[in-house]
Image (cartoon, rainbow, N blue to C red; front, side, top):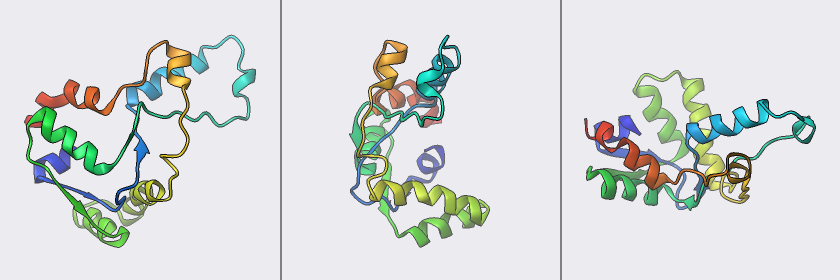
Length: 144
């Protein structure tokens, strides 16, 4: 997001698809609870699905940055190939750019927007961090 804010443009190939986005703090807190559990049996050989507070489109995320931080940010819809080309022209290795682009591909395919789980609430006792809360906590950093 920082590079997007600096350039004034947020490039995506996710279209209008939705995804449940998480903060790293929420991921870390869930991982810590699982690793500190007295009984790991419920998690053995299981995939833990951690979903965020609400399904959001990239357009809604960009609008939140505009509203909360007062930053002019343009949403630019591109193809997967254009997204990869943009990342590589900015200095990312091509393979890494391809991996990052799969997040948008997955979002379009419904991978990140179809299943919602309350594991953050269940394990930590608090709701997941919303995108608005995430941006509000970082708005001064985003303005720099």
